[in-house]
Length: 270
Image (cartoon, rainbow, N blue to C red; front, side, top):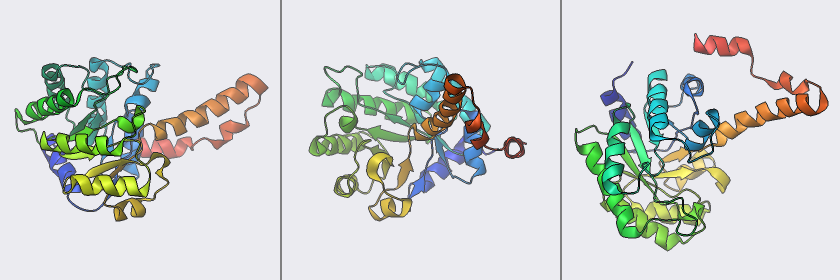
């Protein structure tokens, strides 16, 4: 197995040029499957993980997430980026302390969001949001871990699709120490190209979502990293729920025939 130092160096190298897909497993098994398929790095998904333990997104605890991140890192020989939500705290000092805990799980990167979870005031004040990124940066640098920090502006996801505001925040997060920038929810070519240009030369992560872009098309717009959030988990749940609902509602079992072959799964996990 590669050391955490090796994985962190490899992860940083992936952000230097080109464009790569960083898919989001929801547990150790799905992480191993993605490694088997040849992906170069993985990212956790807060929603996908939460659903595996019968919780809604943004309802998991710091302890649960850190145990999950450690399990992902142990399951694969790849860099793992942590969806670390909002740092599991409001105050910058507590965000920093929690980031230090996440670093100890072996992750190669982590992201910090600026959403509050409060519908009345969905984003942290700009100054506080910047201080939270600075605290995460300081925690990462305290032991020269080399963990890559992604700064996220959630404006488009919380009903504030103001591109100028989002860009202003991303630029501020970059100055505060974020290595990579991320505005989940942007989807048009113009929006994507504008964000890439605004934070250049820092790399940008794109949540592929509703953009409809291919890897090559995203690369042409200057995107460095493509993630899929909870989409793989929802795809897995889609198959599970279709088969389960058929059994519950019709007493038939045809959907079970669409499952992935057990022999192939056994072979992959050997």
